[in-house]
Length: 444
Image (cartoon, rainbow, N blue to C red; front, side, top):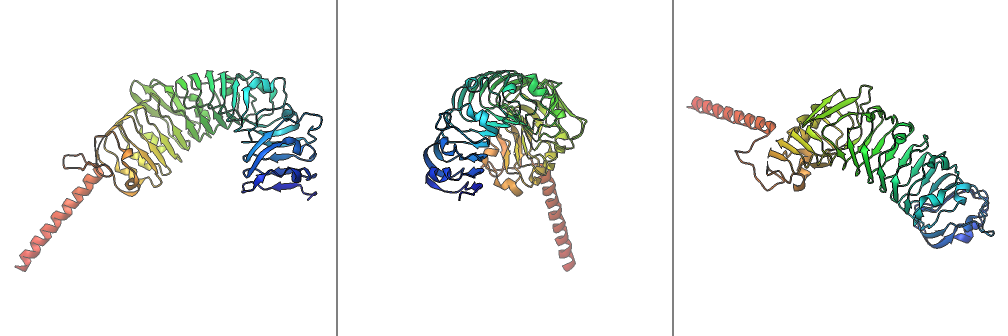
């Protein structure tokens, strides 16, 4: 099929040796996608060297070991690829030709790349828009002028390596996706990341050793939708800057050192901002929420005070995790107003009182955890609450009812909804007795 221009056989179960001879004869091929199959063995990219029209090559996630050296006289690439995808191909080295012969996308995740990062990219000027070298074994520091090496980048994923040192001061302001999570970076988040990246949609800095303030007041990320800063040592205030990120959908800042004496703003879909203040052990919310991120995770910090009634105005939220803090007070019954809530974790705090029966009105709730608080009274049993196991309630010795083995008795505090029901039953029972009494008199 020498006239073939596009061949996509991805995500099947083709196995055996890679069909190198057949591929080398596709002289007019422009796009070749053989990813996510079960081809095996060792191959060299020299197989594709003479395919002068080749623009897209994707052989990722097979059982291959791919040799990427192509600079010998007998194996010089004649193509100028737009996209090269070699994820999970046991690639051991990045060669300079990749930055000269690939004009748009380079995907090299889940390989065996080793050594310091700067040795691979020193004195390189690339037109790449996407660079993914995540989940490898690269180490060392990032060059301060990385934006000069990759001035056209829109997507940079260096996560899951062993990079260390401080984060570079400068990234291209055209970046839409930046993921540096699961490394060993330290120091503060540079001001340039927090203020000069107006196009940024995704920021991942989780699981490093970052310190300092979460975000200063003069930060601005207006288009941010996903923010992952969890598992660092960030401290100080809850970020005022997020009030300007009105498109934010996922906020994950768990396992940091946010203090209880903080002032911060949450995005609200309007231009009014949403303020909450930690003063001593009181938590004060001001403002009105019109919309909110799909998920909020502020677990494992030092947040104190009560859950405010305004939190029930969060629109569209699906995940709420405030576990492992110092929050106290009663669980607001109006939390049952969050129609889309799928996961609610209030565990490891100091909440007391009964579980509001209104929570059974959450129609899609799948995950519920209030363990290790000071809750008491009867566990609601209606709707999806019949599916939650003991683990959801551990560490609350005064809770009773299913699924716990502790039975409720008359001395146990009963939630108001049950009290009203019991009162109604008692009135009906009394009315029936009176009715029977008059019937007997009439019959006599």
